Length: 207
Image (cartoon, rainbow, N blue to C red):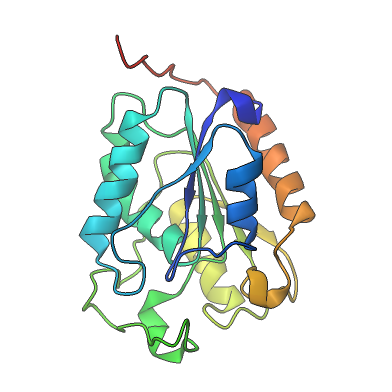
C-alpha cells in the first residue's frame, strides 16, 4: 500500500504535536494525512478523544491507517472495539512511544502541566484487548513516559509487532525527533505489509 492509497490519521498525544514534531511533518508532507483534532489537549478525557478518532475514521474515504504517538496510542487502544464496528474499520495502526497511563505520576511535566494520574481521565488502566487490525509498536529503551518492558507488555496484549528503537527517548522533539527518517522508513515497510492483507474499500461520500 502506498501512502496515497490510505487516509492517514495522525493521532497526537498529550499536549498535541508541535510544529517541529515528526507527526506534524508527516501531516504536512503526506498528501492524504490529516490530524485528529481534540478539544482539549492538556486536560484530556478518554471518551471525547475516542469519539473524535472514531468520527475521523468513519468520515474517511480511503482505507484508514492510524499513526499515533504517546497518549494517542493509548487512545487508539481504547477506541479499538468501536473502530472494529465501523463498516470499514482501519486497516492498521502505527503506534509510537505509548504512554504508560498506569504510572502517569512518574511522567515529567509537559508544557508546564502535570497529567492527571490514575483513572480520573478514563485512560487508565491501559487496555489489554487485542486490536482488531494489524499494528506496530515503536518502543524506546529510555522513554520517560513508559519503560521498555511495559511497552513490550502492551504490544503483546494488543497483538502488535514491536520495533525497539534503542535509547531514543520519547521519540519527540525533545529527544531529537523532528525529522524522523527511520520512522518514515518503518512506516513505509508497515504499509507494504498491509498490502498483503485484504483491504475493505471505503465508500465515497456520495455512496
